Amino acid sequence: MTLYYLDDLAPGQHFKGHTRARVEESAIKDFAREFDPQPFHLDNAAAGDSIFGALAASGWHTAALTMRLLVDSGLELAGGLVGAGFDELRWPLPVRPGDELRVEIEVLEVRPSKSRPTQGLVKLRTTTLNQHDQAVQISVGTLVVQRRS
Image (cartoon, rainbow, N blue to C red; front, side):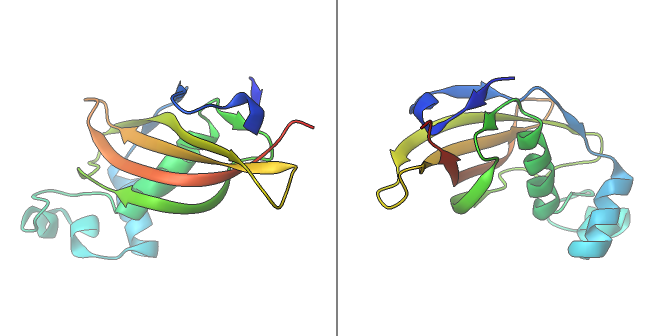
């Protein structure tokens, strides 16, 4: 696996994750019970009567799965995946039981820090896709990455 420093990254670079995550119905309900206990995440009948029309994973569950997929993606950044914040986080489609998720990453911006010469910031667009290549989450976030020194 390649370790990427700030100096190795440039706008326009693309990375595809190496792994997939299968989303089980039990995991959707377990996550929802603990963190987002709304009926459309917990109960099939209630979900059928909701705007989702069927059981749907919490967006926060999708975000947590995306984080795991990023860690396993093969994009190993010097210093780790250290977040500085998000500009955008969207869930265009719900995640359903049985979906298999993967991530694609695009480097949008790279800038050295003016106050910390050993690091910089990288803005990434991360798209989480299901098995039909449909985007289920799109985020634009900034990570702190070490510089080669």
